[in-house]
Image (cartoon, rainbow, N blue to C red):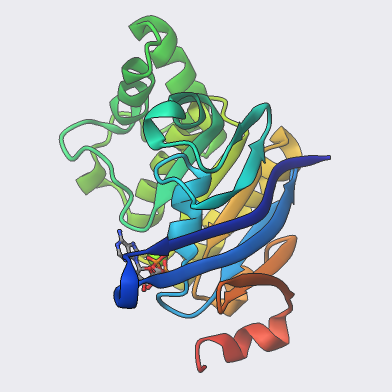
Length: 235
Ligand SMILES: Nc1ncnc2c1ncn2[C@@H]1O[C@H](COP(=O)(O)OP(=O)(O)OP(=O)(O)O)[C@@H](O)[C@H]1O
Ligand SMILES: [Mg+2]
């Protein structure tokens, strides 16, 4: 059963001679409970693809089905539901609020989506426990390691019970061991909680820990394997 299905998705920027076609007919799926890694040379359109899937940018043509949502070419102001209930985001630089502790960082984003404070706090606590930070809830980001900060961001992403996590280079600022821990956490969330994760990474080793690897190149996605992945960053 697929959680995400992207069909013939196209996106370019600019017009006339300056026109740049970035996505040229992307077809891909992510199953429920699947961790998929997305690799590809810098500037090939990985973030653009994630932004369209996340409802932050509209495609020129093509379609996206995510859970019960159908969109793709709809403008961002018409896909509020996708952003609110469809996807959780994780970024390279964590995007935590410096002055809020771990608990409030997670609870805050739930409150912003309209959940009453007491319920937000309960859900934030259980999300932090889920990512192994039950004993760090009162710590502010500065008092946490990079790996722990990213796990707070993972807690925030899963606390809203959204079916798909989009992670744009989630391990880019982490050492090897912390990076592997984040990927292992993704794997647990997929296997045990039925989440789906689409993760961009430049690291072939981390990419190969996913259930499946995709390569985005020349505007199209293709299945990839570990041996070709090692060559991707050299092309
Ligand atoms: N709003 C925009 N206007 C014009 N061009 C854009 C815009 N957004 C992205 N691009 C261009 O689209 C291409 C793809 O960019 P994108 O950020 O998706 O690449 P990426 O694969 O995520 O790269 P990286 O690995 O470096 O993060 C680039 O050439 C970029 O300059
Ligand atoms: Mg990018």
